[in-house]
View 1: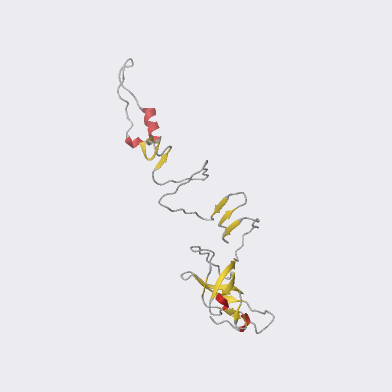
View 2: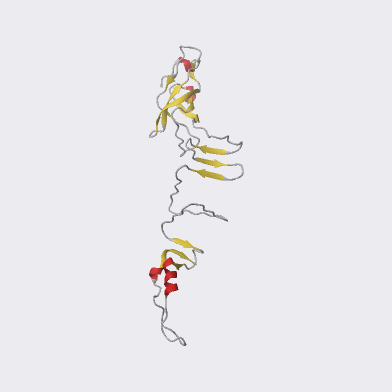
Amino acid sequence: MRIQSSIQSNSIANTVLGQIITYDPVSFSAQVMLYAADPTDPTSVPLTTGYLPICVPTVGWYPAPNLNDLCLVHFQEASQQVGYISLFAYTGQPGQSVPSGEWWFFRPDGSYLKFTNDDKIAIHSTVEIDISAPVVNITATTANITATTANISGAVNLGDIMGTLTPLLTGAASSIYNSHTHTGAFTGPTSTPTPQLTSADQTTNVKAN
């Protein structure tokens, strides 16, 4: 990468403030427009880098920048030829102040992950939250679900899932029970009820004990 004298002193490159102008998600790199070293000097003009790698706090975390985000460009061992990007200042800032001591991961669209000072964790999406795994375990003293509609696809086991689970009766069972009749003498045993409940009147996906 060629860096002009506007950002160097005695051939030693310094940390430079710049602005993301293009981003490549495949290589996780970006081009940066470097601000002029001296904005009062008409000969000191912004320069554009090649694609520089983006340095992240830890392996596996990829916070992709937005175009026009401010960033710092550092140079390994003060070399003008080896630059990398760090410390973004996102242009989409949260619409409210972040209290001291809290950690917020905030998107301009309003989605966020918050670690708050009251020891709570808040997750919010403006559209949808998806969780995918072969097994999902939730352990809590109380679990509250508030929704206009709650949809569950698949088998549902209620109670002690390690014990014996039996099917429940469906809504059709109450109609059969309320309308069934017995024939025979009133003074002795009667016949079996008509109609009778069958396995079709029991739940197949929901079981309990």
